[in-house]
Length: 336
Image 1 (cartoon, rainbow, N blue to C red):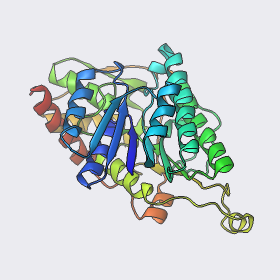
Image 2 (tube, rainbow, N blue to C red; image 1 turned 90 degrees about the vertical axis):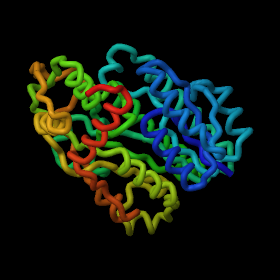
Image 3 (cartoon, rainbow, N blue to C red; image 1 turned 60 degrees about the vertical axis):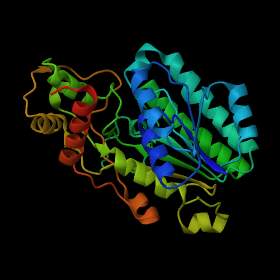
């Protein structure tokens, strides 16, 4: 039996696959290697995974129904970690159909694959803190209502949660969704703010500071995200009886669970930029910009459920995480 990791050449998918491979697990990775950001970065991540004998890779798109069905029919996966998705809030304003194809159709194909492949014991999938929209209550807790997304990306992730619950309820499929809060670190995505800031500062360009710096984000280091996924993978949610669900005040009796994975310590955008400046030993030229469509003013994770159920909460400080990213960036790109 092996573990399927979709989006294996992506940021989180790469680090999770690496951790699993180093633990001796058999990993089957898939990725469509699209050009949303530089493909060379994805291929370089992938090359490191392919050095392991216990890693198998197939280039494919989860939006391809026939290919996805064939994959599940041919491979006996014990666990599926679904990380493949069209990412990015702002890009969803430019190319909405990419989100429908990957995040909606692709997710249905994964659910169908798990449903018909009876050897899949657990489906873990990536949701996002974006589902909280402009919720005013902080910190954001998984029991909060998330009915008003402010971007198509967020709407697709909320849809994933609803679709996953339906399959869990109907087919007794154990499913866990993880709401990631602003993941950062080495080998990260070039479309993310921290990557853009470091690249701009390294090349002497000004950085654009949205909402005039009046933003707060719960930045979560990649190692903490992976540790959370690893622990959740081992904890299969169980179907509850009606009495158990009532006694536990559970929102559902289905074998279904949602967790936040965040650093539970929001940082202002200006403090974030200062941390980058300190790590690089350079001062950024800043251009103040208004809030962008689809953005939210703050994110803040309540991780009490994660701590109670799997005994873990992210702890990596921003200064440590940013320094590790800057060190990697300078090594990878050769920029001072």
